[in-house]
Image 1: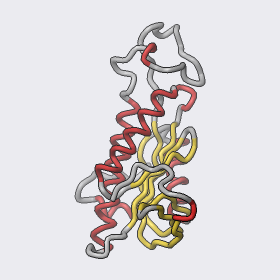
Image 2: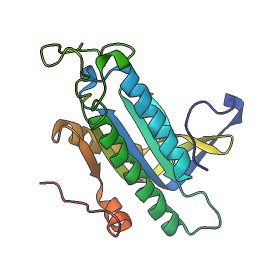
Image 3: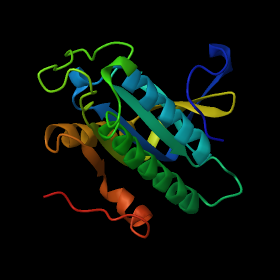
Image 4: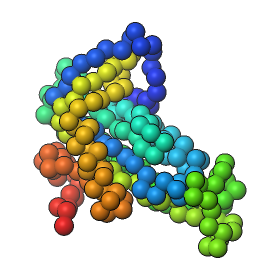
Length: 201
């Protein structure tokens, strides 16, 4: 398992379904005007790589400024409670790594390495050669149920309450925290042994 996203197979090969145990992470640029196309492409490439390496996650580019990571319990040989725990931890790890990648992306790079300036343009008053910070990433992660679509056996689309909950958490992370990773309460028992989850203030 594990999928880099994209259109796998034709529409005729799409299989609709429903899953009670899904983990969805909505990731969105908080300062999109600072993030150039090269950075966005590299961020998506890393997301695809992390999903494939996880063996349980898939990712799709949801818009020019956001992407989705998701995974569900579809292994008949693994208990769902155990599987959703593993999937949730993988999603949280990926979200943390993606945010760190974006926040530190500019370090040691020059503007000439970008294919084009960010939408807001470069600020040459700061430095006319070195790349400027590329903004931050807001992430919301939720566990729950959703309608699904599979192509070639890989989960390629989710639509339902779990995605909506993750999107709301992403909004909070963006609007209140200006970047960072927010999880819903259902993530706590799944990740408390491996991650430090701090209640929002």
